[in-house]
Amino acid sequence: MRALVRRAGGHASAELRCGPLVLDTRSSRVSVEGRALSLTAHEFRVLAFLMHRPGQLVSRTELIEHIYAQDYDRDSNTIEVFVARLRKKLPPGLIETVRGMGYRLVCTPP
Picture 1 (tube, rainbow, N blue to C red):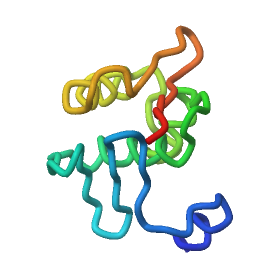
Picture 2: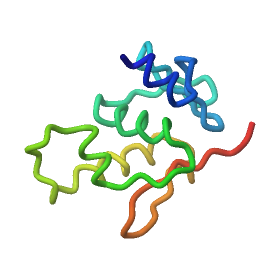
Picture 3: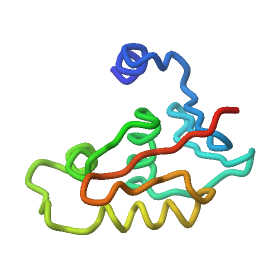
C-alpha cells in the first residue's frame, strides 16, 4: 500500500531526500550527510509526512490526523514538541513555521 502511495505521489524510490537529509521509508532510517539520526516513532512519522510534501504547507491538523487516532485531543501541543525535537536534530532552517498555518519543509537543491 505504501509503495502505491509513493508511486502515485511520484516517489518510486524508498529514499526521500531534502538537501543533506535522507529518509529511507523501507528501513525507517534517517541520516544527515551520511550520519544516522535517532528518532522516535512519532518524530519519524512527522518528518516522513513533511518529506512527502517538500515545500508545501502542512497544517497542524493534518499532522495530528496522520499520527494519531481520530479521538485524539486536538488542543494538545504534542506536534509542536515533535517539531521542536526534530529541529534540534536536523540542520537549521529545514523546518519552517508559517505562523497560524502550519509547517513547511524547506529543501535546498543539491
